[in-house]
Image (cartoon, rainbow, N blue to C red; front, side):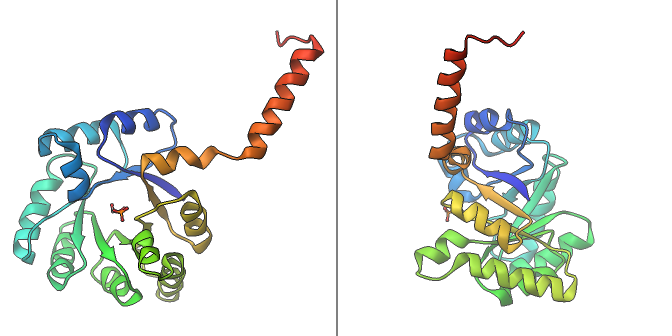
Length: 217
Ligand code: G3P
């Protein structure tokens, strides 16, 4: 499974990218708003830090405007993926951008029929929002399972990018359900390594080592 960061916080992005296990990044207009940095500068800075795919969203209503914005965004850096909304206009734009080899991510996916549309439009990624489904008392991970089944039935190449991840359990469950990517906010990412038995085990090992009087080298 690929790990993307879902963030526009450059300090957090650099801190976590230092681990060496970040494969890409996603943004959305709300995250851009939070960053309070000029858009182009922010995206270029992110793209010079993260070498893998970086999703940046269009904000137009018509497919023609989305296509224009998508082409412009794709020129900002070679690793840009153009994010398009799950609307008929977004699907049309996805078809056209795919034809000219611009990578796309169809976002705000909440159903299997929407995921089929993204695949048929040639999207590079589809983003099911699992946390928002859970918020609505539905089962976000179940949607990933169903999309995975459909994509395998038809050999669709679109990758499933689990988004709106709120907990480390969402990450594991998405992996079990077969998501290709999890895009993870930094505060959730930080929790992935935690387990109280690891902490307890380490305390015991350290204390026994100190009592042993041994040295490494
Ligand atoms: O980037 C899209 C997605 O991850 C948003 O998450 O927490 O706002 O539902 P959230």
